[in-house]
Image 1: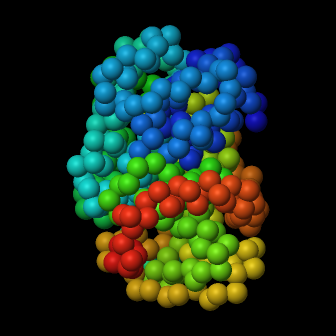
Image 2: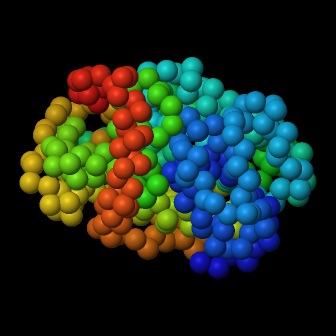
Length: 355
């Protein structure tokens, strides 16, 4: 990866202590950037995830707070907005917290950045799930111009689309160079189960499916398959995602949308099988009915636009990526366990009530 346009630049990463954000910071450091300012309120992340480097400045707090926004310099070159209230289930449990940490953060950041004349690009973490067709039939690759429904499964999905709309507004009205990167299902190292503060449900701990399955498999537990694992997703390794975000910053056109995806559909049952094989977990999966809130079924993202306009393609397939995640989890087992145990007093005994 060679992006000289980011070399010696000053970069803001909102949410830079998080899973994707911390991986992005590592990739940016490899590009010899001049300075990285990380802003994170550690709601669903850990300060230990921020890379220790003299070029990185960590500011603890939320960009909804004007006293935090004042730390953003007026000579900024690039900004990545990755902060969010993590996950559909948490947003369903607390829509107001989702609004505070997803919708309002985007509005406040756009308002702060609209007058930064040096700004070359703002890259926003949008959500592919917000536009994917709701189907359990055969999936069709979701393109960037897919129709947007007014009916959604979660406040998280709604807030992510509102973020895109705010970006469009600030681009058209103020010339903010806002690029929308639609995430698929990101997985890989540095996603810490139980990271951050309690967010109202057991999904504070059991975040996304891949790290949850790896942890349970390493402990020889049964992997829970909602809808018998028939649902499918587009799994993209986190280092590929970080590289895709950098491509959006270097080559993306303001106001445009780019899917950052593998372009491959993988069922949850297939993910469980790969993880059980790589961890030597002998315990068979446990089958559950479909989640009552989730109508998304099967989906994956089209990669044609990102390939043609950004030159972006993933490099790590799901078998390689899961192998790296299993190894990282083993190496960081004690740290992850401590984060999980932090929430013991909140965890309910029947997780199935929340799936």
